Length: 283
Image (cartoon, rainbow, N blue to C red):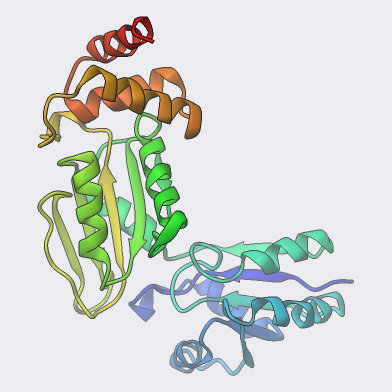
């Protein structure tokens, strides 16, 4: 009988945030597959755990996964942990979970800390849904595609959440601001730690960087009352072109695209619709 693969969330900063259940699982499993064994061993030592750990990160995941699967099939149980937070959420773990499902190995989540939910809980932005976009790629077509996904979320959900590295936070927020205007944001860094930082502002105004920790950003893309875009009045042809890009290339529905363009330019939806319809008669 196969063992169980446990996906264990660990503290994003404050070590007191680990759950009693997570500690029990880490104590009982045969092996802990850790993104960074040094950081994980620090956590284990804090709670007097002696379970053996092995390295499992993005650079060795493909080569290490078969070994872990073999051990699971032999009846051992394994816990997967990352440096902080939940495995598989912008962290290693997803590939191993997929293979475990394919081999009919039980996969059990041990929920806990997450920078995404921590930031959402304190931002105070209204809304009944969000899109998590992970880390923006640093360059190339992948980065452009990430910005297109951000654009596609407008009109679909009220909030977008993403992570960013300290040395790129200013650039990314600046690019978003130049494209989408003065959207309200909540920026967090070092959450639950001694130097915890939570700041509110706008995409077009945020300034600051740090050598400490990664950033988590919540962007309120659904609150049109707080958007003061610096964009000039749009040309009907440009609006129609954006509408076509959103609906044909990005897969956004017509009504959602009209709503998103309405918020972007601060114009009633009926005016955006009229611009789109008018462009058809000139073709």
